[in-house]
Length: 318
Image (cartoon, rainbow, N blue to C red; front, side, top):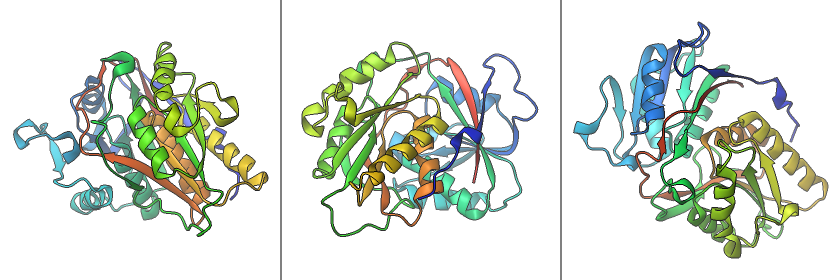
């Protein structure tokens, strides 16, 4: 597993109320539709030859609620089937076009699999948008899923080549507000040693405390409290590249101690950090005993936030 310098990757902050720079124009702009202001505003603001809405069944929209424009709607909730159907239907197979994905409204495994598919298709460079909320509607009580977990499993395309001996399994979870999902993931890998990554600095000053309060509700099941410093790490909630770097250093440290065979990664915090998990996996973990796992729920709320505080554009190279 080779170490990568993630500091070379490029990110800029885009203006909310002004036009975006000329470099922020694309051939294809892809966004997952939900009812959040920050999703709809960015979609209409972006400049692209083609703009595609992806409507996932997990949000439970009826056909009459779909947005106007080019819409790809799906009737199942398997990330691989949905994304492969979209790629085929949109003829998104060229490696020379400029593509941008707004991951803000995506349920994480769908975005992960889409990014992996584009990398496998030969896309060398990809822009990714993530917009931060002004605040979450219910503050620390905000739920980002119905918390009814239908299964915990590997994310399609991120299945590792694992060894049978599970005595030294390691689970690294990027912990967010959904304490029930943290618990279900911990139970799924009950015998694994566990490490948690918190989003710090947070998106907004008050969000870290809310994060800690929610994570503490899962402490008994996970076996880690917020103050257990040897088991806790930190990465900025809006920076995928630092997140990838922190993951890389954790894994190198654990391997250096000879204390790990199988590694399981689970991104449960911001979409920006999930992008970091994805980038780390694709660049360092292919054909390794490393898998991305996720607690899949029956449904997800259509909107959890109010307003936009910042818009980020990340440039990812494969």
